[in-house]
Image 1 (tube, rainbow, N blue to C red):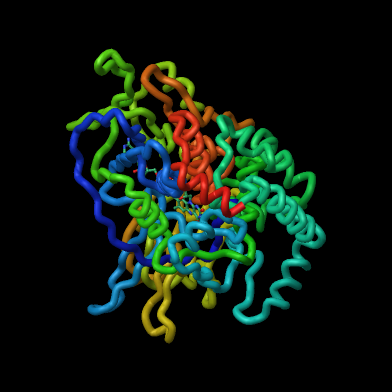
Image 2: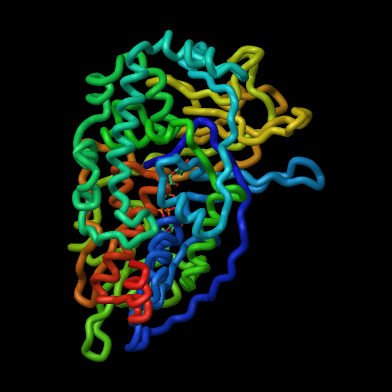
Length: 488
Ligand SMILES: Cc1cc2nc3c(=O)[nH]c(=O)nc-3n(C[C@H](O)[C@H](O)[C@H](O)COP(=O)(O)OP(=O)(O)OC[C@H]3O[C@@H](n4cnc5c(N)ncnc54)[C@H](O)[C@@H]3O)c2cc1C
């Protein structure tokens, strides 16, 4: 389930070796799987397609339009002193304890999970902090939460715990690293999860009204949906709202050294050939030696493929598909712009008082230039000014920055992400698999309309790998089958 928190942690990255772009046609003995995009969905797919040796073994080509892999997972480096640099997550940062597939990847790759940075938190209604946590008394915090939200708080906790046990049923019986059954639709994928799919067909505000209270909904729950998705509860569907709540629990983590390592290392270990700086412009059917094939074209090159995977949102990928397929992939989904701005300095005491919390989230409908602001790095002895990350829907102007930060604070960088879908009830989901003369086209991003998170895309990547094996009739090598039987 999704995983985002007010306390985001920012960590370093690693190095990869990639091949360069050359036009070619696949040979007859092995199939060529062409993947558009090198984010977590693509990495998960590559892992599950190569984890068990297959016959015939497919060739995996991954096309990435930017200069690095990771997509919406990435790190940024900031110099702190002349001889010291810190690495901070610029995109997806926090993973929830319930995210079994991300946990499995960390173990498989021998990476380390680290807890996110903890600090004090405040809820800002545009003129004051309606609630704030203390630095050293969990007990006092619990009491003030219960005093403010009463029984609704317990109902919310129960709701999240039921949700998580329903969600856990999505994983195969053998665990997240086992073979996933191939699913053609979102409904099938979420079938084991007791009605979770239905939540995407209803407004989250219905859940809030029925189960919680107006105050909990407009303050704490709104703060969570705003920091995670830049949207108020009234704009969320029941699934994505629940995903946000599930990712706000206590058992959060990130990958020590940077989440992007999962993408880098899964692609590397699966021997996927990654072509960076290669934007795919068109996907068409073509005839070669009398046989239908799929053709991918960039500005300079073209490739023949047996199967194509679109491992990026159709709405942001800017790939031209044949008209009928384009219609099936499109659900008129808009994407929410979220600017992640990094500032080194101190919060403005005129706005937030002389002792502001480490992270400030905004309540429902607040008209501030930011949706959240929080410390993502500070020195152990507190001598150096900390680094803050601000999320905002529009680019922060000089007056907006001056409202949030003390004079003398310095803007370090800004990332204008097309971050996640603008949710739209009832959500419509394109199918995962589509057919063109010459081969199938698999699409991983329908899941994002339920909830956009690393785990969701990783799950969709695992499902895509199973669909590919089914479509291309790829079987485990006989030796592998024997050893699998032995294990039983
Ligand atoms: C600011 C921010 C904070 C977030 N925080 C969290 C968090 O804390 N926890 C969490 O779980 N999730 C978080 N998310 C959501 C999470 O990042 C995404 O849901 C997930 O990473 C999506 O992965 P993906 O592989 O499906 O797509 P992407 O990561 O978008 O990967 C798609 C790739 O395809 C490439 N591409 C697109 N079109 C083409 C083309 N035509 N040709 C070639 N390449 C192409 C893109 O460049 C990109 O690299 C956050 C997202 C943002 C933006």
